[in-house]
Image (cartoon, rainbow, N blue to C red; front, side, top):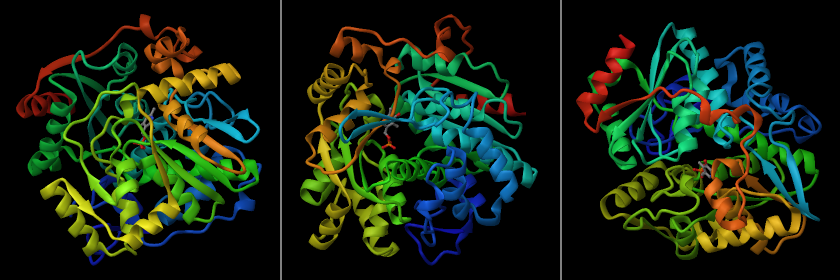
Amino acid sequence: MDYISTRDAQAAPVGFVDALLGGLAPDGGLYVPTAWPQLDMADLAGRPYAKAAEAVLSPFIGDAIEPAVLRRMLADTYAPPAFAHQSVAPLRQLGPDLWLMELFHGPTIAFKDVALQLLGRLFDHALAQRGARATILGATSGDTGSAAIEGCRGRSNIDVFILYPAGRVSEVQRRQMTTVDAPNVHAVAVQGTFDDCQALVKVAFADGAFRREQSLAAVNSINWARIAAQVVYYAAACAALRAPVRFAVPTGNFGNVLAGWVARRMGAPVAGLHIATNANDILARFFATGVMEAAPAVAATLSPSMDIQVSSNFERYLFEVLDRDARALAALMQQFRQNGRFAVGKDVMTRARADFAATRCDDADTLAAMRRCYAETGVVVDPHTAVGLSAAYAAQHEGPMVALACAHPAKFPDAAERALGLRPALPPHLADLLDRPERTETIPADLPAVQRFIRERTA
Ligand SMILES: *Cc1c(COP(=O)(O)O)cnc(C)c1O
């Protein structure tokens, strides 16, 4: 399978490995496959997760990785110790036609593990094949950093540096990064905010000489392989429930819910996709008005992993709904950069509304959904899951509705305390997290400091 950029359909397509290692296309667009492979749903029913992953991912990878190697990699990824639960993404029934899909059985107890556990292995293998090394650099406000670190720890061809704002992540989130004892892992506290961290990563990538010298790479959610890996659990849920399924998806960067759309595009019987946003509601406003407009500032909510101003993966969907007109897409992105907004026509909105429904759930709705779920079923959900569940409760639907449980409730104990007056316990593999020794260094928020820090540790 080859990949093209959403912003330049004329450029020569690249293969899977280049899309994987490159992350962003050179023109600033996102990579998408040249065609959508079709799934044989009969092939998925009753199969172990790793087998379902092979069926979904093989066509995206093509001959870039030998089939036997890929099979071994998937068997290794979607099993203990990485995933404690046998079925990786178990469905838990909450009501007659309501299920939770638990995506938090990986090392960092959030759904990002499902893709990043595989990505670390894919990177390592691709780099080994090329006889190369890469330095993965990222910024985190919490969940992504630890999932990237766990995905990359101990891999021979990767060094990983994650910048986080000193004193501004929760203790659990910080410790998930700083207690990993692997020589290729560097959790770096930056004297600044998350925005400072993100800006530092951006300028480090923009420094061409540094980027080439370090073979800088990114594993953020615009990486195509992350989306592809997330398609698997949508298809697996459809196969397991043997019926057209609706999904309610707590949404930030639009990566997760886009994977649901891809599953449908590949032939999985997805009956509906409910985008659930918190108070950072750029998507809910877009679906209401047809205008994409960034809010003046990010609002801090009970679901911090969805506190974003712009949903970067939406570009991939927009490309499709514009019938893959890269020029029209690039023009909209240009408008957005210049004016912080763009509008699309009626026919585009008609098609978009047929693909997605969008709901905004503020903190009060989040707490109400946590309380309702607990009262009705005794199940404690995390505040991100609650945002999706709130949309699921509100939606009129027939047939199965699956709400994606994107994090374990113990990852956000303060929200559970506030909603339910209890603090959920960490799962066994993290039970001693608060006693493990931490390893971190603090640096000032400037580029030379970051570059020096990285160079000293990759020389
Ligand atoms: C990242 C994250 C989200 C948002 O997912 P997107 O793919 O960015 O839309 C939701 N919930 C949790 C717990 C997350 O970590």
